[in-house]
Length: 601
Ligand code: ADP
Ligand code: ASP
Ligand code: MG
Image (tube, rainbow, N blue to C red; front, side, top):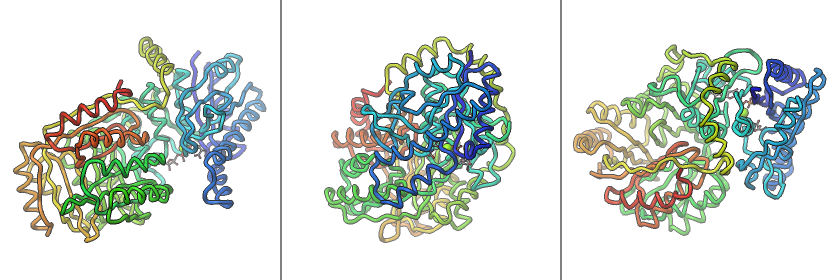
């Protein structure tokens, strides 16, 4: 019998009428011949209300007790859902995370799933029940209740779909699918018919709150197609699957991370081990860091800037201040009023002109770009929080995400068809997945590849004025010279108000690039242009690299142990790239291969 998982988010169970509506949907699915597992979130704003209640008592509640508190939200809704299904004359059984056997690690507030028991679930389903699982929660080895992080019910749902080898995983929410960007911020956003795991992973981790990013990691790792749709209509929704609808599109979505904060460690001595000292202390607090950029200064000292979630700024600052003492930094500054705007697209890796289009659109609106980082499939810029929603709209429009080429061309298939298709393709793949599920921690880090690219060179312009329009001008001129740029990083401006802008180009375009950079530097009044004729780009790719805070640290540690200095870095969900000196490439590669040997598949 086909098995489906249906997840209902907070707004879909916000009151008794909505609970009954969700109950009817599950009953309908059962009557159509499926076994049904429902995963439900806490009702409406319950989780926020519980957080607020605790905050009225103290601003430093123990994490363990917060999980005890927050998990009650989901316990209420599973019970009410079971009551609703009974009242409609059908069999249902509600289960908490502990009752199912959702085993997690012990990191309260952001626990990771290690394993899920299926015996009791299967038995209850075989007895004819609709099983209602509490989302967002589990237990650690000592039976303490843990929660998976805000939005974590999505992850419960996809993880259950994976262990049960479900035929469908349906995420019912208050939008009718995944849009090109948050439709609450940009009303012109359009629904996408089908999106790839990699793009969705990036979008989710860059702020597209429609899905918890870790749920997409599960989808990708365990081959679970995810169907996002409205709980209030019968619209077709969006399929999140391996193959995107338009792999050729340079940009398929845009996202905003509203609540970011920037930290800068000023005047550190630029030598191996400095970054490790700083980031390992932050990682020890389980805080994930993004947009790491160095401003290579004069006289061997550099500024290191990066972003953290705003609500973790204070904790991160404590760690950074300790590290700053150890590395004899000149100071630490921070800004709690910034936001990150990102564009994501698989096609951008093979096309030119994407970055400058983004920078130009912001420049024309007079929006200052405070930092830039790029990776193969995304470009992120840091702007002031105040102008961030406007920046998102502008960028969304610049890539014409609001017009027709992005309208869904392919509509999600109905459940029955996808069941048949999956039945056919199951065989070996299913067996392989099941073996993998039994042999590992479900959310364990997995690395697919470690590689070295020694074909590029680096150009750095320093003393770049801190005002709107500079990055746009630089990359328009570079593009006009026919140069293909790969990585771009722009540091946060130094205390004196000037930033460093570095980019990588193919080695045979270096002299042309340096010439162009010199012309640009002169016309914009920058200080100087430096370059490196051969650099080595070392890349580690896998799944969920940013949520595993330890990945960048392992890289820093392995390289620093070998005395290799990291010149540039960028992180994405599927890949971390570091640029090191050209001569250190092979040594760096060997170091990384041994550092990740235990998780390389
Ligand atoms: P639920 O309670 O069902 O889990 P969420 O509030 O977590 O719902 O997620 C749905 C919301 O995500 C939407 O109302 C929308 O505002 C927001 N959102 C952000 N980015 C996107 C996007 N790219 N596509 C669709 N919705 C998005
Ligand atoms: N109730 C939790 C939250 O609000 C989990 C979820 O809804 O996914 O974050
Ligand atoms: Mg959600």
